[in-house]
Length: 199
Image 1 (cartoon, rainbow, N blue to C red):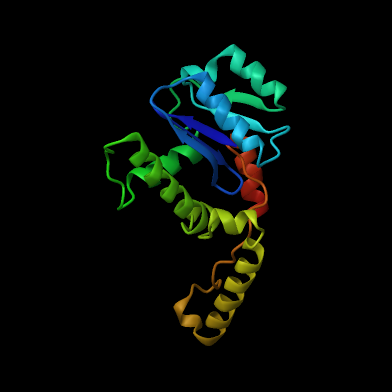
Image 2: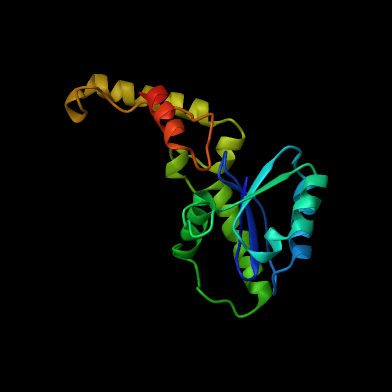
């Protein structure tokens, strides 16, 4: 799981399926807002043993907050100072949000921003097809539908290749596979191992 803190908002993203599992928009940053958000998520999901990776916002860096998370069964890590891409999944989410055609840029009221965000999160989790997931939605990934979807896609491509091989490379169409293990910031050695397994 990864999280991001803006001046007035919090969002938590499950890096395995890219689903936003909790969010809130407030008028100020505070540890209290962060606690309320985690408590509301814990009522819906089992967070025991989960690592939370966060940016370096003040509320998330407080020692009391780290201890409180530990009492809830969670562990906290932070982005390295001056490393902008240390939290890539949540950064990608906010880029998608800010460049979405319906993003107004500014909101007149707090309630307006919350309403818009709720609609956007619903679309993001259930309709937005992520390139990083193989063009499926977070919901499809969470429900385990990705394996069947990729099987169907591969079968369709196999039939198309048999019928029109000239439309493909000699090696044939790409084979889609469900990535079962996800890394936040893999080391160079881990990347080499991943590449060997894929190849």
